[in-house]
Amino acid sequence: MKRRTLRYPLPTLRSVLGRGHLCVALLAAGLAGVLVTLLGVAALRVYASHNLDLIARSISYTVEAAVVFDDSAAANEALALIASNEEVADAKVYGKDGVLLARWQRDDAGLFAQLQAQVADTLLEDPINLPIQHMGQPVGHVELTGQGGSLLRFLLSGLGGILLCSVVSALLALYLSRRVFGNIIRPLRHLASVAHAARRERSFDRRVPPTGIAELNELGNDFNALLDELEAWQSHLQSENQTLAHQASHDSLTGLPNRAYFEGRLHRCLRNAAQHQGQVALLFLDSDHFKQINDRLGHAVGDEVLISVASRVRAQLREHDLVARLGGDEFAVLLSPLPAREDAQRIAEKVVSSMQVPIQLSDGSSITTSLSVGIAFYPDDGHDPASLLNAADAAMYQAKRKRRGQWQVAQTESCAADGKNRS
Image (cartoon, rainbow, N blue to C red; front, top):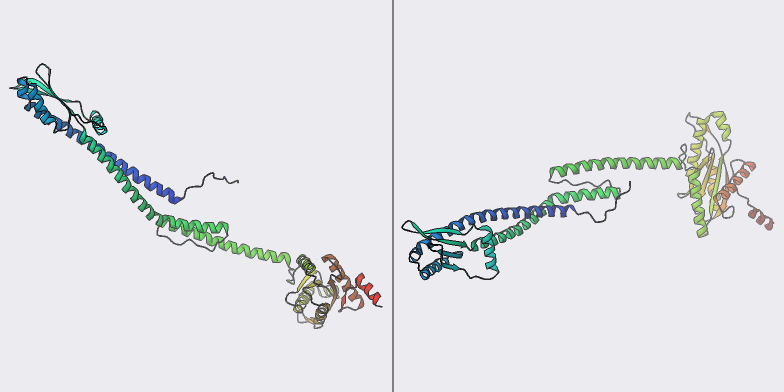
């Protein structure tokens, strides 16, 4: 399945939680501030209306005489005296016939005054009309329009409070987020780090440390249990692979490397010798009269003989030399590095001599056998594995024809020509 490539990097859990805490805190502070402000505005609106009603009553008592006597100057003076000290934007006094007798207007200018007027028009009720009575009879009425200064100041202070609460809430959200990061993000980072190592590096030996949160601790325990199973399965697979690799490259009877392994090793040795102008010796070994042993004593005895031959040949070699079973009763020995040709002849002599001791069989009897050995040298007798094996095989058959249980050096055309020249 093809994995989809993300155009933008995904946000981290830390940033998501941080933004979430901040948004919740700001939303809560904002909603609380707006609610408190609305409640305050409603209460202040009632208070302002009641205050205007009291101011209107005070004006009606004060200007009663002026209205009765139709004294406009006295009415204006009394109206200005009271309205100028209260939150009144416009005050009017009407006589008995509805004639405007006195008027006072606040002459404030500027942005703040405009805002006050806008707030008053929006939040306050219609202008208050209160009758002016004299001896129980109406002689005129007072009309008052509120200023809205208190409401505007309250709204501005409410907005300031909301901003302050938002800042405090943001700081608290950041603090709480850091607390949450320590309890949640750190365990998740440990878990992600271990999972990353298991997936990328196949490092199944790492474990998630315990944490103080129950759900995360349980998740870590389950993940560690899964890692235990993966580690055990990996060890089992490695063991199986090693076993299969050994079986594929070694002979099951003698435990020696097989023909495929030997030819690969021979190819590498010849390539290395060609690069460094070195020489290599190849010994081809064949058990004498092995077919008669198999036919007369059975395959079980033949197997015991092959196992003993392999063990004795291996014991005569140097640490870095290689012996392999090519098949049947045929063995091959690779001598590399080879300082001198005499070293190969000396080892061949030791191999032949080791077979002089009788082989002890499992039934208590013993049997004596011998090995015929052919020796071929690189580069004199061949430049590749096939030609070198053929030369050693031919030398082994020469040894058998002369006398079994002996070793023979390969006689190539170049060697034969050298011998003729010497003669």
